[in-house]
Image (tube, rainbow, N blue to C red; front, side, top):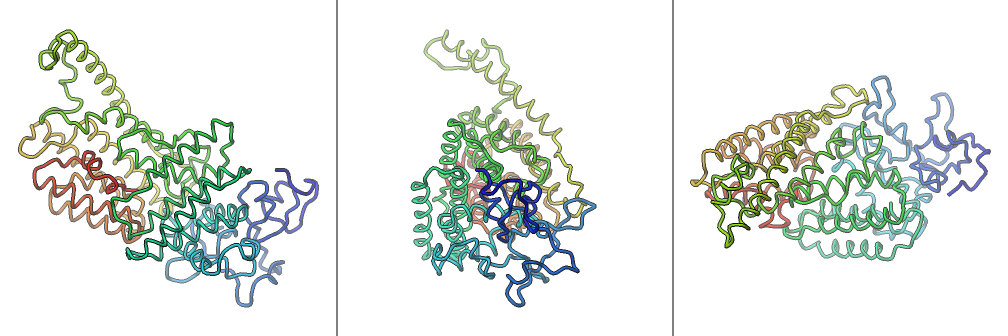
Length: 535
């Protein structure tokens, strides 16, 4: 949509984007409406010089100066924090405690974000909880809070009622805690979001808003700790995301930068769900991967360029799914040397009614195994040689968590690939080859744990690789070490999926292994659906 005023007019005190584009800025703060109408994320306003009086000082309440705390430098030569360069985000409290944004209701400027009467008075407190907790607890670091809030506030300006309803629902979910008696209001709020999705009218921001609401449904499940493990709805939500993407792309719809921003969060969840369910991913990387992949992401960190390889890993898992869920007799590996046997040798061990059909089947089976083994070997080589694309020049302390996450996910992917090709043995019937495969898997699990030794707060995004490593631990000391990491993740990222994962590892995998029964987590995840979602 073109700007309302001619592009030749400029404003002296306009936002950064409007001044750069030489368009008239309406100067609404903290994010201008002109950028919202142009479908851009407003980068806010330049910080006035220390000796000059701010033109907006009269808008702030007495004693209500915004405290800006430096989080991390954009580059090694920059001293400007993300909050300073993007005042769209809610200000951050200073002090020794964890930083948290002030509510948008703390300033009269909230009227520019939420028209009077749009949000019930009772929901304002829940929206405040959202801004105070959600970005800080779920993102990889506080340096991404400004970016996330900017995108949320832009959606809020476009459709205040619907978006505020979703934000309030997420905030309310945080307040529920582990009280099962409070689940009914959560379900009611989820139903309201679904009703808003069904009643959405076509608009220029329909795709972005629908993605935001679907992402909100996933967020509600993640932070509602009282939900029982067997009622996981995230896979169903992701199926709706796939349908939405297919319809939007098939009708020639454009995928904006805001849509890709929301899609990256959904794609991360979809990849984990797909790896657990051994199926193709529903949110293809080609839809959301863009030229910004060399920068750290709020959830993926430096692993953005690893996602296409994980997508290929999902495809390989889908191809061998039947062999995993219906394992061969003990002692046989999924892709061992027996798969390369000659058709005549294979036919001698196959029980069918027709010798000719048996020979044909084993020829096809041998060809399929050969092709799968070749693709697996190629993928393994590319995973081992993969390195994150880094061009942000961050100092070590600022980039440590991104580098550790990238290395940990790469080690986890190699462990996952190994277990696809060499499923675990089963107790006393385990052959020597299975024991060797288990020993290699344990070594790869230790590789994963090697990258979890940093500060506890920096390991909160490592649930998926740590889960894979935990399933390989048989020694009591190893299990205690992985439990410590899982406890740390749970302390810094309070989500229901962390609790489900801890229970699944202890009550399903470890218990089955100690009892010498089927302990392959890939099989157990299908046997107990909804209990294993290490997101």
